[in-house]
Image (cartoon, rainbow, N blue to C red):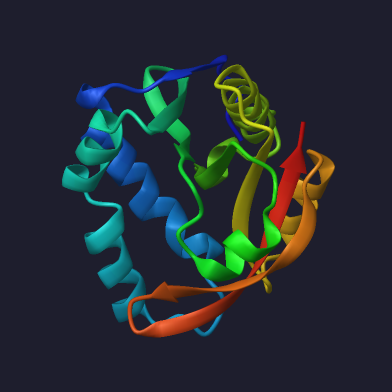
Amino acid sequence: MSNSPVTIDRADSGDAAALSEVAAATFPLACPPGSTPADIAAFIAEVLSPERFGEYLNDPARTVLKAVAAGQIVGYSLLHTAEPANPDVAAVINLRPVTELSKMYVLPGHHGNGVSGGLMSTALEAALHEGSAAVWLGVNQENVRAQRFYSKHGFRIAGTKTFLVGSQLHSDYVMQHEF
């Protein structure tokens, strides 16, 4: 575990490649046990590539936060201020305006030292500052550790949805934090 001081700030277009590297290292750790390496690789290539992070960083409806220790990005979160596109989510998230916490990952060597909590606090503050009444997220139903973390930060299960990783459909909880 690293004890380097961590700063959390808004990422910029120069961070796209480093964010993609962190995403590629951390996303597989949150996948359900039945996820295949091919499906995980397809998801990373489609959703977490440097090019996609470049798009996220240039989208005014998205905010990417980075956690930096010893000059390296060790975690990130991605917020998206938009109406929920998934009908299952739209049916259970009733507050407006709303922000999705689309992604939040920290490298394993930085777990347990406040990086995740700092990212979450900063993400919630950013959403509140933008005028959101709530923040929602999807978390795999088998990822009990993440569910405990989100609950600790005021998220409650509001419903369910499915999530596609490569060719595999997974079951997620929809969790909501109200301000």
